Image 1: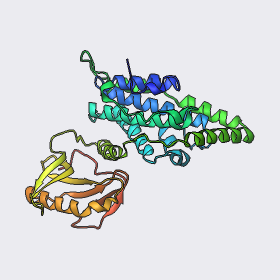
Image 2 (image 1 turned 120 degrees about the vertical axis):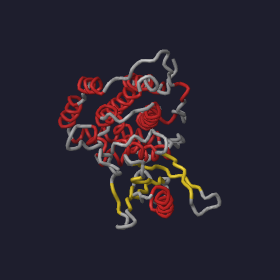
Image 3 (image 1 turned 30 degrees about the vertical axis):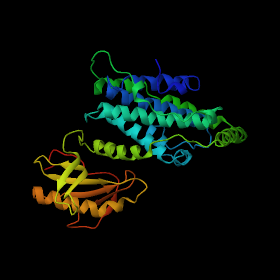
Image 4 (image 1 turned 90 degrees about the vertical axis):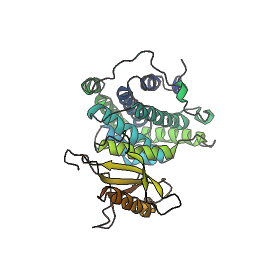
Length: 331
């Protein structure tokens, strides 16, 4: 059966096996699919650290440390690839360790993010990378289940995570790196640099879907904070009283309290724009929500990579790393 990951088959057969597993579970077991996507990402990142001496080994061997190492981030081009990696890592973690719902929308998107990252890996690190066509993720190739079956539970996924732990592999890579001489490392780095330079002689026309990555990263950060945004009224919420011809507007996200009143709103802007460009529009949305519900929400505006919080009745805006966390006392 054809797969979106067929381009990996002869270049990276092990990655193909794991990516194909993630793809096969998208509709039948979304939580397990996200776990296998994260596991495939981990395998791919280990391959990079094992083969590219430009990448400096971080202070720790866990996946979070590997993807946040500065040389790893600097090596990614386009830069949005780092945020694809973050999406896969964070959603995989939520799937294994958090009861927050994981839907088919999540697994489909995460497998698509994995597709783009692995395409990049082949495009720049394979001897024939410059001849790799500009592939497009084809959702019709994602298998539909023939019969309904339950997804893996959190406990089952945690047991599987322990069983497939890659800590020993990274220790092996670190030990092998230490045993290489400076001359050997320099020769290997020169070889990899020449390969990438050769592949860069042909422009990379692949569409990495940067805008979708940005928007989904906001979703992931909200899920990480404990919010179930896959409910009516939580996204694209229509409001009335806007100063425009129709009097209507659409709030990207509203975080609702237990009392049914808005605790916060989020205005999402394209990554090419400064997130502060959404400040005035978010203020107008807050006015409308306050008029309707008698409670003024906290304002967030974000482009997915930078986020600002604004309690406009009390404090000026300030940059933050995430969003309001869901607690039992909210509302």
